[in-house]
Image (tube, rainbow, N blue to C red; front, side):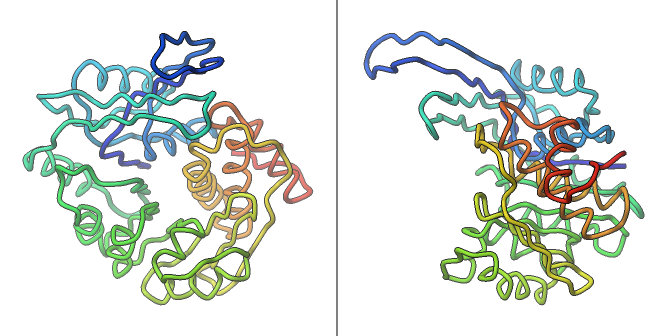
Amino acid sequence: MICTVTFNPSLDYIVSVEDFRLGLTNRTCSEQLLPGGKGINVSTVLMNLGIENTALGFVAGFTGAEVVRRLEAMGVKNGFIFIDEGFTRINLKLKSIDGTEINGQGPDISQDKIDLLMKQLGGLGEGDVLFLSGSIPASMPDDAYRKIMEMLDGKGVLTAVDATKELLLNVLPYHPFLIKPNNHELGEIFGVELKTRKDVVPYGRKLQEAGAQNVLVSMAGEGAVLIAADGRVLDAPAPQGTLVNGVGAGDSMVAGFMAGWMEKQDYEHAFYMGVAAGSASAFSENLAGRKEIEAVYAQVTGRTGSKQ
């Protein structure tokens, strides 16, 4: 079983407004409604690559029902726990004004619902794959990731964790198979500024020494670096292409890496699949599909794209 967890999913309302004017009525020239959240992004890219998976987490109200409906329409299996009160947040993203968005809060999550999720995850075992992605809602204890990893320790579950600072550091003693900080997040952990691919290697090794098996560092226009469990360091410049939408590129990289690993158990192939998926999403209006990922994979490797 392959599962993603999104503690605080969203229904993303993505709009473009020509000549936006503050304090006046503005009308959209384009709009989209998509399920959002880091784990959901991973689920979407996995599904685009033909890999069945189940999305777990919490949803509420009519917006939560719509998130589930849209995921099921993609083929993603529904494992969400329904919260009795409130509604799944709506995030407004102004596409025509770079980086401008208003994100909702999401529902409060009670301890009994958290216990239900832990019960779901407790059923995972040898050969299963789990993605833990994103932040923890304010209504949840901030050690949720650590407790999940502690519960699964020694059960043979392949875990990928994409989180920041303490959330990430707290899971390292449980030896996650993959962690994916970007260079800014890695620098923040150690109080340094990391600008080049060479810069990140010693700090990635420190996270490896603390327990991570594979450390994949995304660096936007600088490319990416993998400090692999077999001792190798792989790096690649950013593929050539036009940045269209950076949202979800990091999630796509995580999905691509794990898809590549599940396919061949080869770190080089997994790394290039991660780079290809992350870049392909950055070059696309939405999260990349198989054809876009294979095209970038061919560019970065000089050979034909992955076949699932």
